[in-house]
Length: 167
Image 1 (cartoon, helix red, strand yellow):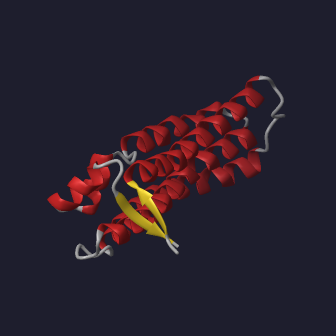
Image 2 (image 1 turned 90 degrees about the horizontal axis):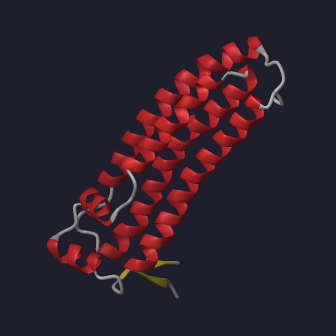
């Protein structure tokens, strides 16, 4: 029997996943910052660092652009005729894909900073954090992304309404 999820439960779950990804980015950046500033990161590896720097620039472009367009593609594939109970799980999958792709450059920037023993690479982390914050899954953002009808929006705005079924 499928598990029914209310709007309140859905928003709590989606926000826990999303904000934990933001926390991981910041925590990892803080650990790398501490290791570099305390001198525990060593002297670095300039040869590997140069290669990773190039890979980082490519990875940032691919992840951010790819994450945006893949999210849009996945959202477009959600038929507007689908009931809300079918749209919501598909939205969660699209959001998780986008946030994971956005998370990768921040984590990789921390690795590059550690290998190069240079704090400048850590500046990517607040930029990614800001992108995460701006694109966070608020009820209005979800409704806009899914282009909910007025009836669906009314249902979605009710915290006790059953909006999803998960197997």
